[in-house]
Length: 286
Image (cartoon, rainbow, N blue to C red; front, side):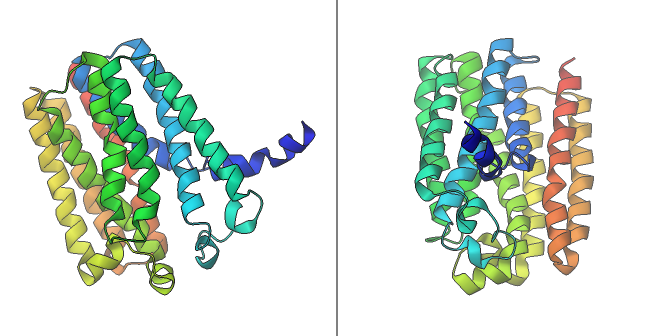
């Protein structure tokens, strides 16, 4: 038991418990979807399923990501001290932890309905394959977006047992948003990734990274506005989109010189985008 307590901090770091930004970026779209699906405050049962489910699946995603990157993280300045490249956690332990986290999340899904359970298998597949995509395509951020956004159809299935066509505009918005902010994240590692042969949208976009991410953010706002109209939302929701647009402008200001620290700051700022939109949506339904 004492040995486990000594090693617990390493497992927690592997799950990024000390860096909750990824959990928040996954949580906000999930809450948006639950509120849209319920037409207001969702069932307490679904909140008690999806919130811990998000925490577990984000942790699982971090673990499988580090397992996939265990041979390259040691060559990247930002990641060289992670548990796997530093040797404090073994690859076998990481796979076991990933399995346990997925099983715990699936146990929560079993409390929903058969339709949601079926959709959960797609979510796990997306989460598991994303980390390996950077070896084969310059668009791993697109796969990440599809994985992060999959909580949206699952939320609708759990709340309403159906998938209305209106949800797919929201699904597209979250994919586009994820590609934009994860490109900021990839811009931090671009020089290291070029050296070790890891692919990303930051490398694919090259000198066009700023105008392309700006275009993606405009498309996010358009897709969210379409979602608002599809679900007959009011002024508070659309006001939140205006504030989100101002935050996007601030992020573009931050990355204008492609400074690594400023790009990372722009990535982190997206938590406020998610927060503002959720507040606007919740108040609008009130």
